[in-house]
Length: 343
Image 1 (tube, helix red, strand yellow):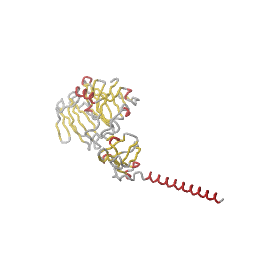
Image 2: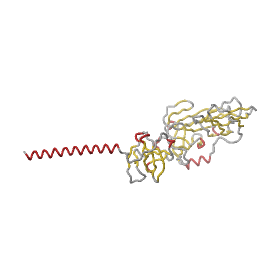
Image 3: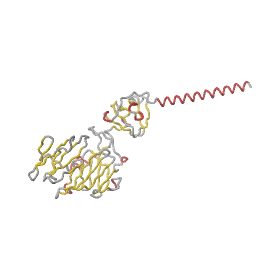
Image 4: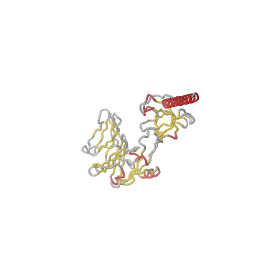
């Protein structure tokens, strides 16, 4: 009996010790989880992208966040969510120093270091086939909405290399405007001399807007102006030099002109992607007919100055990833061919 009591005592003591060790382990685990970022230095609060020099984007769903700019330092293999913004602070050797906001809370910001090879900087983003450059938000043909979610319903779109683009661009100059025949300037307005001998004054259309002269389109006898409102939204309008009765025409950018087919094309960015507009000019009555208006979702364009007609059904354009920071002089540019089955 005495021996049995001793054995039971030992078993009870062992069980208690095991339970205590398990509790200690669980407590340690909780501490480890809650203190994951303890080794990381607290960072300044950032509320918008313009507060930092650049943004970086993880190439994968998880990203190693290092506590120091050293691959041998402590790191966290952190899942990066679509709503996470990785604010770039500076470069340190082969690392970017970033500001990571825990749970997207600015007050819980930490400095971390990421390998340059693990991320894209916001001027290096590149479009691939996975970005679905054919995807549309809406499309109108001859003024009628069509139920198409892909450009493939009305044509073909593909990425092309820079050499192919440059070969066409250099051989077929189509920029519409010249600096000849400038209008007279009068304070914040411009005065045009019309063919009939009269004059027409062009003024800004709202109190807070700004108007600038862009150039003269000889093939249409129109002067182009750019107007920028107080929200920095821009639009362009063309004023005829023939007489006062011809209506001004508004464009989303200065178009390129395929004179042999009287086709005009302009490509401009919007908040999400970019909008392509194609029109046909009638030189007999000085009117325009809109043929195509398409809103692409997944890329943006440099400007219509980098748009070119390869032929009457095909346009080439310089584009970039929608998240690209274009204020960087060396931002990543790519090129596309847009072919319409029929125009």
